[in-house]
Amino acid sequence: MRGPDSRPLGEINTTPLIDVMLVLLIMFVITIPAATHSVEVDLPRDCTNCPAINKVKNRIVIDGADRVLWNGSAVNSAQLGALLAETRRMPVEPELQFEPVSHASYDAAARTLHAIETAGITRFGFVGNEKYRTFAAR
Image 1 (cartoon, rainbow, N blue to C red):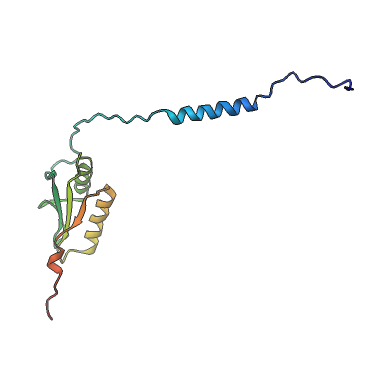
Image 2 (tube, helix red, strand yellow):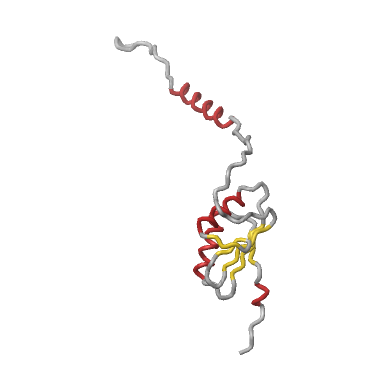
């Protein structure tokens, strides 16, 4: 009943074996624990000649000349970025209060807010708005 060319197959189908091996490999990779340990190292500050950072709260004020003041000391944009990054790396992020004066330019306030957002500051608030709750009679 067999023809002259029909012989039994002597090869093993390895496709299911490869599939099982790939699934096992994926399962082993998924179950490897992530490295979550860290070592605290005090590195030098990024900013030279920067004002001190208060560990509880810091205030950014934009004055009428569009200067950015960090706790009363004038800082440039690079120093502001370094100060914000340093506060973000603290174990407990200090509160950041933002207070532009009434005649500060919108552009300076927008640039400062963008720097704060870019730094990833989470404890942030506007202060001093109560000064503007009533308008002078004309």
